[in-house]
Length: 164
Image (cartoon, rainbow, N blue to C red):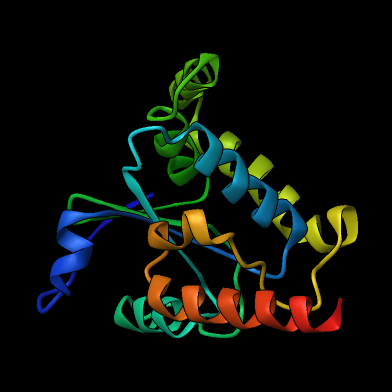
């Protein structure tokens, strides 16, 4: 589903392609890593829905802050959810995966019902992380909260070094 952005939208959301994902969901984290590995042009910015930036974006669009039923994708001032969001991202990544975007030709309610089925059972099927997945320092700039992530990654690395 596509939705126009409300007035007073942050400039970032008008100019960047932003993916919001559930940071504690293992499937969602794997999806994010899948996108990062194939996004050679680094066109996507990412944020977990649990991050302050993700929460701000959800609030901006009047979406629930405590229930995450869909991946959210924002591109050129438009918001996409559910299967539309996934297929728009797939269409832009490198490799043969982009051909899956042809699934947009399928009846949207059918696509979304499959999406909803997986989304509803994703924790049971794939599990959860105790805390949000953090990227490595080489990918921190892909995240809207990259400065905070770089600082946290440095802290974790120094703690690991001290523990050795």
